[in-house]
Length: 101
Image (cartoon, rainbow, N blue to C red; front, side, top):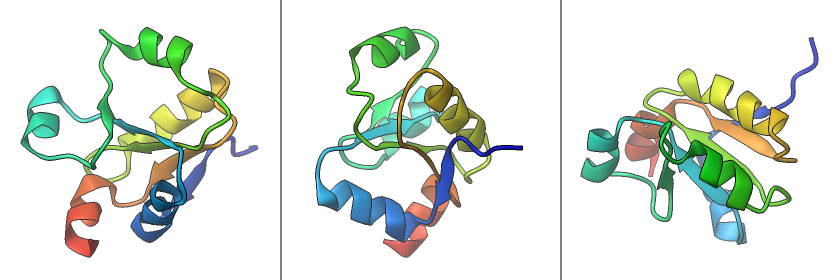
């Protein structure tokens, strides 16, 4: 099987974000997102997913995170299939982000 997205560590995700332009997607539920999230991330839902796909720069790195880094893998693959050239899933998700940073 050919892997279409990449799994990256929290540290790698932070480096990508600090390097400049990237799109950060939070696929957790809206309540969790509104409670706390990675700065400049967008909460993805069925209501805005098409808008995100149509309006995002698909050449920029796309960083997807969830709670623990499981659901984000499928989402990262989906967005890669939708034309995003660099699609990443954050290992450990937001829980690891909070612990490590």
